[in-house]
Length: 558
RNA sequence: UGACCCAUGGUGUAAUGGUAGCACAACAGAUUUUGAUUCUGUUUGUUAAGGUUCGAAUCCUUAUGGGUCAACCA
Image (cartoon, rainbow, N blue to C red):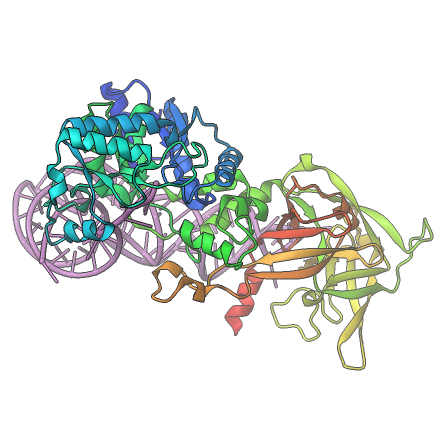
């Protein structure tokens, strides 16, 4: 039953429940409201809920919490289903809180009959006023004295559409003096004459979250209803409804939601970024949404691994986004196909090169697709007289620890030959325009008999057949670690340089890239094809850079 | 001026009255035809004060700090 990892507090509860025989099988649920796209925080909840039923042999339902028709849309329902599936989970049942509207209506009638609920004509302001504050008791108004018959009649009329939005509500009759504000006669039903994405115009009254969620759990025989910390105070109400209604006793447990450094997790704020065009959409690769991360090149495996690593507890937390990047690098390193792409090129002319056998200025060389995975096979690359290397892989006046190319020095060109820099050619302005080098024919990769040893190995492409591609480099969306914690509006902290589009010169094999493939551009990072890519204009997203200890070294010296 | 939840290295998370461990980060070194990967090692922690106990991160009390609660949102 247990794994190598120690149990989190919810697993402990479940194991106790299973051992005591409280349940023979567990049932969890993932209950998104279809009013936005899923983000990495939801992934934590998804992995938890589905992971639990997988681990202990149970069920997990997908239930859309669609009790507020004004914010919910079918588009969101579809995206949520796609994202959960992509993450690798299968739900036992697809349910909707709106499936239970009739049943929920009956529950309200039962409470009214038992004298536990009443219809209130007060305005929103009046109700807020009467509710008191956390330190001051609330007061009950005269409507609480209505008879059961009157309440039943009014509730029925509410359903029939006799009243307009805000004119009447149904409240539970609990305790206006409770230190828990939610117990001060909470609202059960409100009138909303708006179109619902599933029930259309059938209803004009809709249950509130508290009156829908627990009962929906109960109807589905959910054994462990897992939610985030801010619902702790709702638990008392959750249990009250179940007790008064005498229905299956689901139990609520709360864990701390995920916070990620340099990003925001609020659906409301993410929606704002989309609506106000700070990003191109919910699936913008800079977004912490599942769809954004998918487009960026994250794999389901890496996200699941991340969710496993961060753990489940009740303490407020802010996870270093570096951990997420570690997880995706770890997975991509195993599966990504290696390719060579030069971003800021400088031309290298191999002055002594000529292919003797073919009497040509180029030759084919073999290189591995993935040095971490022999099964990935080999591919051909073209070496020739004119090559392109990265401008910052050359230094006219090298620093001590620099072991790339510099005048008189040698480097290995990956999977090709060792070259030596003989001459720097500059233009009128003094900029380096090309490098004249000689190569050592006997230093060919795989059959090196030169006896030469070099410290540096560079990536390169043939100048004549390099393929120009567009590469989108992403950086964090925010400049501060915790944007939502700041006093000022979160949008003031948006990183203006979160997207940089650059040109790259890729080896010819890049033309065969598939959108399902992941790539490592050697010594650069991990990339994947963007959905906007075409055969004429290849567009790559940078998922994440490679770790770069040289960049760190340079920084240290400054 | 209330109720509730929480407190372990820089960040997360274990240890369930008996050796404070793991991951990321950081640092140092080895290997390397990717300054990547891999490998080895190092640094850093129980919020505080009392109490219970042979023994406390763990139980109790108080304090301190952080979070949540006054939507006809979920």
